[in-house]
Amino acid sequence: MVGRQPVSGGLVAVAWIIAVITFFYMLPWAVAVTRNRSNMGAIGILNFLLGWTFLGWVASLVMACGSESSTNVVVVNQQPHYGQQYPPRY
Image (cartoon, rainbow, N blue to C red; front, top):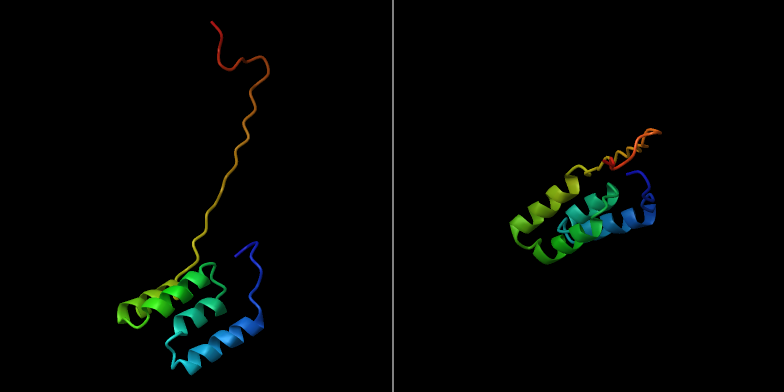
């Protein structure tokens, strides 16, 4: 979650109000907004369009509750040793 802006409290409140008004149909989206998931928009669309099927609702909830994947990038800076030629000349 490094480098991502925190979600506003107003958006969290709106998400939970919508979840309650829809009798928790939009619960996965509210959970995603509360947890500041990077794919909260996709979760909301999936929940809205396919939530009426039980599998779509469960898939949305699993996406909202899952852990955020992270990628570690390692940069290796290799300098040639002085006196060596790359590529070797014959």
